[in-house]
Image (cartoon, rainbow, N blue to C red):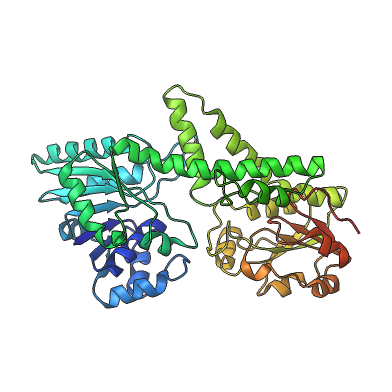
Length: 445
């Protein structure tokens, strides 16, 4: 089938590449000429394992093309995905200006029937707004053309998005039209060879499912972080508690890893947006508000531990920071805990020497020539001349401790572990002070 995707950001590009890889013909449209030119020459604007190779292969095979020509993209296919950004407004609500702009563009150029599919994460009721926008624009043109609007939310995890897209747990399709459901089943047939993964529902339920899923996962993270903070005060080890509760199949082990808070482009934005939607219909979403509040506090945790260890005196101290991305296997620093830590350190007169396997360019873009930040080429280089080490992101190559190297380079022989990668007992045995998240007690040498 032929498909057009508006928006070549994270969601749009992954969806387009995977659809093309399964044999569909896909045209991607974006207003950013530099981004389109780069994609046409094989340069991928985001880091996602395997995405660059898949994109290049399908461009070479002629199944995937990129353009800024909206009219061409609309004429290219009957099925058109909207996968543009929905950034949060000042009040936390999702900004739909780009989604509705694409809807108006589709209506301006369409000459035949179209199936418009919302792939962007959007509030409940957005499909109605898209439908109204298209109908209004067609009326202004003085033409009557058939079109449908469906919801098909994405459930991708940064760092494993290709696998999530190729082997989805479920494919949610929101529409009351039998014809739309038939077309979507045909589109996704290659993804359901083992068993039918499509879950069909009405549009509003599909839109709500995406928010409910992300808010549930964010709730699990904030819950375990709340328990970690309590465990620290009660003298319990949250890592042992995690194993105990995770063994219950009703709870499971996923998303109950204590740490220094969640970030990224999804959880923070979606929790705020759903809380805002609740407010708009006269409901106070107390749990969502608590999830957000707990996460905001948790992002301060590493800095609080540092200040506790040094009794508030860190002016002139240099901290080696391992990890800048909000999670491993991405270069995304949106809402990352590292940003809260760095800015707090700078505020009180400390400096940072940071390393991340993928997010160095992004850090340079965000902070430019910040004099209190040195971006180092390796994790070992970040240790040289540092007083202490801070772990912010749980990259795999950070997991094996090098005690001798730490003792050699860290002037104050202290490690602040925001992801609980290491065992307090081993740190003590190696004469290193250690602070984890909810580990019951800190190891002070």
